[in-house]
Image (cartoon, rainbow, N blue to C red):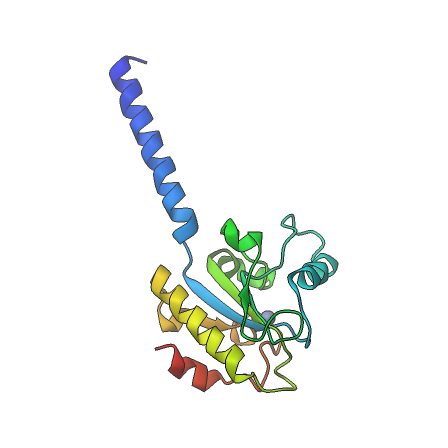
Length: 173
Ligand SMILES: [Zn+2]
């Protein structure tokens, strides 16, 4: 290869790598809301649950990108995450039926079981704040905000019948 062709080829490769570097952390197109279905959680606890349920996941982290506490294990309204979020790794918060949404969807989990209890106001406010900020950062439209159990192909009640769906939809626009 002559020098000129080498330089052009290298430039193209560097450009592609650059695009990849920009693509990876900015590819998020969906946000999916979950509940933990239990009234206690820490990152370690959720990690352990994930190991037991999806032992085949090579990513030994929580399946979601963010967790919002309820004051039991994680502070009330406290937003936390682990290295899945830090490295922008795909989620494993949806089933195999929704691979694209796992890859392009940020998973947010509220600690609690909203089949049984209401979402505390402070936790709800934190969810609205986090969702709006992610929508702003990645340009995600309100139509791409999903609830786990309402996604086609998923069979779960997550995030629960007492989750305030309409109120949340109103709050994020
Ligand atoms: Zn869920």
